[in-house]
Length: 212
Image 1 (cartoon, rainbow, N blue to C red):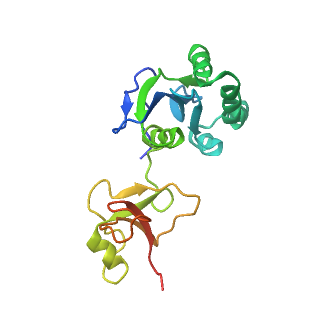
Image 2 (image 1 turned 135 degrees about the vertical axis):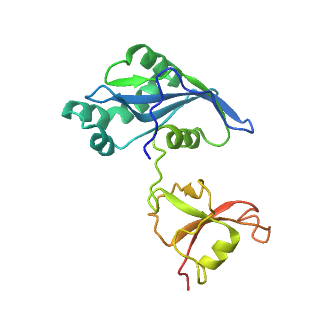
Image 3 (image 1 turned 60 degrees about the horizontal axis):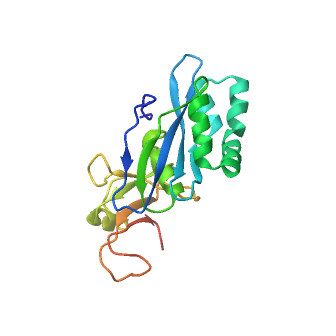
Protein backbone atom coordinates (compact mmCIF):
# COMPACT_ATOMS: atom_id res chain seq x y z
CA UNK A 1 0.00 0.00 0.00
CA UNK A 2 1.30 3.53 -0.72
CA UNK A 3 2.52 5.79 2.06
CA UNK A 4 -0.17 7.95 3.58
CA UNK A 5 -0.05 11.67 2.85
CA UNK A 6 0.34 13.57 6.11
CA UNK A 7 -1.22 17.02 6.25
CA UNK A 8 1.31 19.83 6.24
CA UNK A 9 1.72 21.28 9.73
CA UNK A 10 0.35 18.19 11.46
CA UNK A 11 3.40 15.97 11.93
CA UNK A 12 3.72 14.07 15.20
CA UNK A 13 6.64 14.49 17.58
CA UNK A 14 8.66 11.45 16.52
CA UNK A 15 10.79 9.92 19.25
CA UNK A 16 13.01 6.87 19.62
CA UNK A 17 13.67 5.47 23.06
CA UNK A 18 17.09 5.40 24.64
CA UNK A 19 18.16 9.02 24.26
CA UNK A 20 21.36 9.81 22.44
CA UNK A 21 20.98 12.62 19.92
CA UNK A 22 18.19 15.07 19.21
CA UNK A 23 17.15 17.50 16.52
CA UNK A 24 14.26 18.36 14.23
CA UNK A 25 12.85 16.88 11.04
CA UNK A 26 10.57 17.98 8.21
CA UNK A 27 8.50 16.21 5.58
CA UNK A 28 9.04 17.53 2.06
CA UNK A 29 6.11 17.13 -0.34
CA UNK A 30 5.54 17.65 -4.05
CA UNK A 31 2.30 19.13 -5.39
CA UNK A 32 0.94 17.11 -8.31
CA UNK A 33 -0.69 18.68 -11.39
CA UNK A 34 -4.05 17.72 -9.87
CA UNK A 35 -3.30 19.63 -6.68
CA UNK A 36 -2.66 16.67 -4.38
CA UNK A 37 0.48 16.50 -2.25
CA UNK A 38 2.75 13.45 -2.44
CA UNK A 39 5.47 12.73 0.16
CA UNK A 40 8.86 13.31 -1.44
CA UNK A 41 11.55 13.25 1.23
CA UNK A 42 12.77 13.72 4.79
CA UNK A 43 15.01 16.53 6.02
CA UNK A 44 16.64 16.12 9.44
CA UNK A 45 18.90 18.63 11.22
CA UNK A 46 20.95 17.34 14.14
CA UNK A 47 20.71 19.64 17.16
CA UNK A 48 24.33 19.17 18.18
CA UNK A 49 26.14 19.53 14.86
CA UNK A 50 23.57 21.54 12.84
CA UNK A 51 24.24 19.15 9.96
CA UNK A 52 21.55 18.21 7.45
CA UNK A 53 20.68 14.59 6.67
CA UNK A 54 18.12 13.86 3.98
CA UNK A 55 16.52 11.05 2.03
CA UNK A 56 14.39 11.66 -1.08
CA UNK A 57 12.46 9.56 -3.55
CA UNK A 58 14.00 8.71 -6.89
CA UNK A 59 12.86 11.28 -9.48
CA UNK A 60 11.83 8.61 -12.00
CA UNK A 61 9.67 6.89 -9.37
CA UNK A 62 7.98 10.15 -8.43
CA UNK A 63 7.44 11.09 -12.07
CA UNK A 64 5.68 7.76 -12.60
CA UNK A 65 3.47 8.36 -9.55
CA UNK A 66 2.58 11.98 -10.26
CA UNK A 67 2.96 12.64 -13.98
CA UNK A 68 5.26 15.61 -13.44
CA UNK A 69 6.06 18.22 -16.06
CA UNK A 70 9.56 18.37 -17.54
CA UNK A 71 10.48 21.54 -15.66
CA UNK A 72 9.41 19.99 -12.36
CA UNK A 73 11.45 16.86 -13.08
CA UNK A 74 14.50 19.02 -13.81
CA UNK A 75 14.10 20.74 -10.42
CA UNK A 76 13.98 17.43 -8.57
CA UNK A 77 16.99 16.04 -10.43
CA UNK A 78 19.21 18.68 -8.81
CA UNK A 79 17.30 19.36 -5.59
CA UNK A 80 19.04 16.93 -3.24
CA UNK A 81 22.55 18.03 -4.24
CA UNK A 82 21.51 21.68 -4.02
CA UNK A 83 20.10 21.23 -0.51
CA UNK A 84 23.28 19.51 0.68
CA UNK A 85 25.46 22.26 -0.76
CA UNK A 86 23.42 25.06 0.80
CA UNK A 87 23.35 23.28 4.18
CA UNK A 88 27.15 23.00 4.07
CA UNK A 89 27.39 26.74 3.37
CA UNK A 90 24.82 28.12 5.82
CA UNK A 91 24.18 25.30 8.30
CA UNK A 92 21.15 23.04 8.41
CA UNK A 93 19.00 25.22 10.67
CA UNK A 94 19.47 28.34 8.57
CA UNK A 95 18.58 26.43 5.40
CA UNK A 96 15.41 24.98 6.92
CA UNK A 97 14.40 28.38 8.32
CA UNK A 98 14.59 29.69 4.77
CA UNK A 99 12.62 26.77 3.31
CA UNK A 100 9.87 27.17 5.92
CA UNK A 101 9.37 30.76 4.78
CA UNK A 102 9.56 30.16 1.03
CA UNK A 103 8.13 26.76 0.04
CA UNK A 104 4.41 26.72 -0.68
CA UNK A 105 3.75 25.85 -4.34
CA UNK A 106 5.32 22.91 -6.21
CA UNK A 107 7.51 22.03 -3.22
CA UNK A 108 5.95 22.14 0.24
CA UNK A 109 7.46 21.62 3.68
CA UNK A 110 5.82 20.67 6.95
CA UNK A 111 6.23 22.32 10.32
CA UNK A 112 9.30 21.10 12.17
CA UNK A 113 8.92 18.16 14.53
CA UNK A 114 11.26 17.24 17.37
CA UNK A 115 13.11 13.92 17.31
CA UNK A 116 15.32 12.04 19.76
CA UNK A 117 17.26 9.14 18.29
CA UNK A 118 20.19 6.80 18.71
CA UNK A 119 22.74 5.99 16.03
CA UNK A 120 23.61 8.19 13.08
CA UNK A 121 21.31 11.02 11.92
CA UNK A 122 21.23 9.49 8.43
CA UNK A 123 19.83 6.24 9.82
CA UNK A 124 17.20 8.27 11.68
CA UNK A 125 16.30 10.04 8.41
CA UNK A 126 16.08 6.65 6.67
CA UNK A 127 13.65 5.37 9.33
CA UNK A 128 11.48 8.46 8.96
CA UNK A 129 11.53 7.97 5.17
CA UNK A 130 10.32 4.40 5.61
CA UNK A 131 7.53 5.50 7.96
CA UNK A 132 6.25 8.63 6.21
CA UNK A 133 7.38 8.64 2.59
CA UNK A 134 7.70 5.08 1.31
CA UNK A 135 6.07 2.55 3.63
CA UNK A 136 5.07 0.18 0.82
CA UNK A 137 6.15 -3.45 1.31
CA UNK A 138 7.72 -4.81 -1.88
CA UNK A 139 8.54 -8.45 -1.12
CA UNK A 140 12.14 -9.39 -1.91
CA UNK A 141 12.81 -5.92 -3.29
CA UNK A 142 12.70 -3.76 -0.16
CA UNK A 143 11.55 -6.32 2.45
CA UNK A 144 12.34 -9.88 3.50
CA UNK A 145 10.08 -12.30 5.43
CA UNK A 146 10.66 -12.69 9.15
CA UNK A 147 10.67 -16.33 10.28
CA UNK A 148 10.50 -17.79 13.77
CA UNK A 149 13.14 -20.28 14.87
CA UNK A 150 11.17 -23.40 13.89
CA UNK A 151 10.29 -21.99 10.49
CA UNK A 152 13.86 -20.81 9.93
CA UNK A 153 15.27 -24.25 10.76
CA UNK A 154 12.75 -25.84 8.40
CA UNK A 155 13.60 -23.32 5.71
CA UNK A 156 17.08 -24.81 5.54
CA UNK A 157 15.57 -28.27 5.30
CA UNK A 158 12.24 -29.37 3.89
CA UNK A 159 8.52 -29.04 4.28
CA UNK A 160 7.82 -25.31 4.61
CA UNK A 161 5.82 -23.60 1.89
CA UNK A 162 6.98 -20.24 0.54
CA UNK A 163 5.48 -17.41 2.57
CA UNK A 164 5.05 -19.34 5.83
CA UNK A 165 6.49 -16.67 8.06
CA UNK A 166 5.96 -15.38 11.58
CA UNK A 167 2.20 -15.14 11.10
CA UNK A 168 1.39 -11.50 11.84
CA UNK A 169 1.20 -8.18 10.04
CA UNK A 170 4.87 -7.44 10.82
CA UNK A 171 6.15 -10.57 9.10
CA UNK A 172 7.99 -8.46 6.50
CA UNK A 173 11.12 -6.58 7.55
CA UNK A 174 12.64 -3.74 5.52
CA UNK A 175 16.28 -4.52 4.77
CA UNK A 176 18.69 -1.78 3.74
CA UNK A 177 21.58 -3.19 1.77
CA UNK A 178 23.53 -2.43 -1.39
CA UNK A 179 23.07 -6.05 -2.44
CA UNK A 180 20.00 -7.14 -4.37
CA UNK A 181 17.47 -9.09 -2.32
CA UNK A 182 16.15 -12.43 -3.57
CA UNK A 183 13.46 -15.00 -2.76
CA UNK A 184 16.11 -17.26 -1.19
CA UNK A 185 16.69 -14.77 1.64
CA UNK A 186 14.86 -14.33 4.94
CA UNK A 187 15.28 -12.72 8.38
CA UNK A 188 15.42 -14.56 11.71
CA UNK A 189 16.36 -13.60 15.26
CA UNK A 190 19.58 -15.10 16.60
CA UNK A 191 19.15 -16.69 20.05
CA UNK A 192 22.17 -17.47 22.20
CA UNK A 193 25.63 -16.07 22.78
CA UNK A 194 27.76 -18.70 21.06
CA UNK A 195 28.58 -16.35 18.15
CA UNK A 196 29.29 -13.21 20.18
CA UNK A 197 30.79 -10.67 19.79
CA UNK A 198 30.43 -10.99 16.00
CA UNK A 199 26.70 -11.79 16.14
CA UNK A 200 25.03 -10.63 19.40
CA UNK A 201 22.19 -12.47 21.13
CA UNK A 202 18.69 -11.41 20.02
CA UNK A 203 19.86 -9.61 16.86
CA UNK A 204 17.88 -9.85 13.62
CA UNK A 205 20.02 -11.37 10.87
CA UNK A 206 19.59 -12.05 7.17
CA UNK A 207 20.05 -15.64 6.00
CA UNK A 208 20.17 -17.23 2.56
CA UNK A 209 18.92 -20.75 1.82
CA UNK A 210 20.42 -23.13 -0.68
CA UNK A 211 23.85 -23.06 0.93
CA UNK A 212 25.90 -26.21 0.30
